[in-house]
Length: 409
Image 1 (tube, one colour):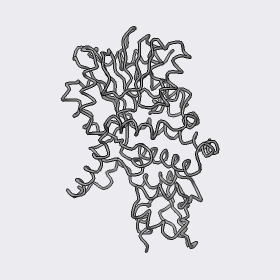
Image 2 (cartoon, one colour):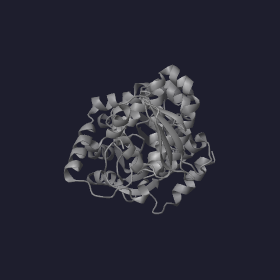
Image 3 (tube, helix red, strand yellow):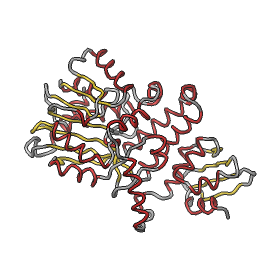
Image 4 (cartoon, one colour):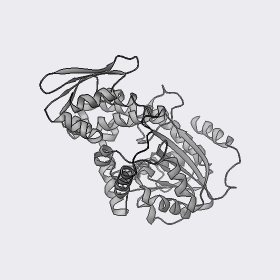
């Protein structure tokens, strides 16, 4: 039995995977099981099997991107789902403790990659967010929200869920007319414009993406609110001033563990004494981990998904009070499936913008992320912070009341 056969026989037990090698020999793995995919793949050359087996985290993605791993039944979403669903995080997986040397090497390698001074942070951001702007128009909602939506009903449209996400976050900021709000990592400006519109607040959005900055500023001009909703190209560490509220959605994943305490120290410095902050980030259930090789190389260089313990621990030296914590367990899985479906529907346009290899890379990224939220250890955290224990009402009722108001329009 070859290395790839032993690898697949160990992994695929529920659902079925049919493998055809470069010589046309076919073998099957797993057992037909309701709810698990049935997938067939073909390996295009004699070396790809050992390449995938020896480098499963990176090798499968690169082999698929390069057309060496060909899916003949099903698609990349089903292939990754088949693998991940056979070892769901919730059921424990391999809970044997890792050896101290393996843990040390993994930790050191991951931390070095996450050292993000200002210049490197801007290059990392440009790698992902300064792609052709038309790409994001093809699969995001009309407001270009590139973060986890909030599904009050799994059947809701992406547009509805993203609107509900903005209302959910705004409600946790306890907004009042005239407050000054800072949006760290403002994307294409949707959240900043929304907060101004529904709560009559002034917003400064900051980003490291030249492309996002141009779009955000244009949108503020078109909405006639450029005097109240402003956007700047600046690193959070270089910003000065005082803000009544701080919101950060989908940016903390790019900070890197070595800069966590710096991030929270700067947020405290920028936040008024009675101010409130809402941090929305992809999170890691369980303890600290490391970024997988494919994501680090092709998607988010310098990025890292934090455990809740890492977020809270890093905020403690700045004496920011974690006033509310919410775990969104399945919302990003619903979001990603809709992004994936829209991407697949726009294959021709995406390949025209880039090429077939880029399209396969993008679908592998979205499919892998979906599986991580459905079967792996990924979730989203919304953590509310305050400098003063008196800054907010002592019950959470105000959140539900404000959210209902915002969602009603």
